[in-house]
Length: 299
Image (tube, rainbow, N blue to C red; front, side, top):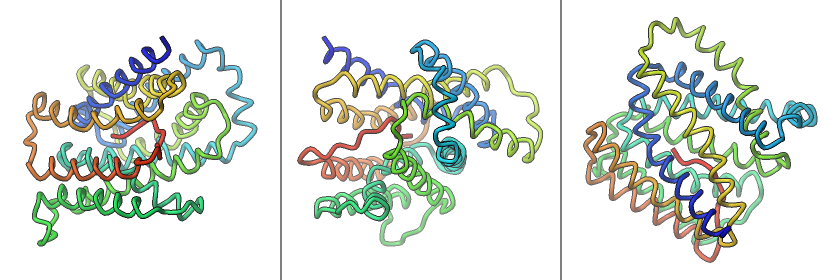
């Protein structure tokens, strides 16, 4: 029964994550990246507060923070503040069908950063995985014209790659976090909000946003940053086969491309599929012989 529930939670999380690239592009029609980050973060903070309350953990929030205040402040500055600001700007500059696969390479970036910051050994297969993954990124960014190395939007590509560094850094720092994961993520959102709101006020007025915009940004807050994280954690907690659950995540980018083409009419360049296959192959090579990266996000 637990395995069935774990599979259900895992599939639900993957299907919801598959929709967020489309939701990002729709939401960016109504908000700037800064405004989108603020509004989605508020929604996520409210949802995670409610989840912590229903789980009977909310009373531990203050104690968790006071144990390591600067640590949680640093986590909040990295994610959601810096990570989503950079990611949303990348989605604003690039087609989502390019930004999403490039961001998906964060797990390969994590391998390199873990070697630098955690002293973990890089195996031969990790180098092969990195080569596959970053070749896929170059193919996507150049639309297949690899030899010319001409990028349609170098700033967007640089920001998408920067988002992988920030996300990998966040998970490296999280290796030292012994607190409840829901409380840890909630603290990050709460502590980042003053910075996010301050930046949005400095950047200019919000103006009038129609209900469609608020609905879209609420969806992002719920299913990119909030509820889906808890579904994924439950899947990993209930399963006895972490590999099977973790491998579900490889379905996500392909469903995402299908939704982008169907819902918002993005043209999916053939080179994008080739590059995405290379990135996924790199990730599979990286996980070979049981090396599994547990995470909650890919965007």
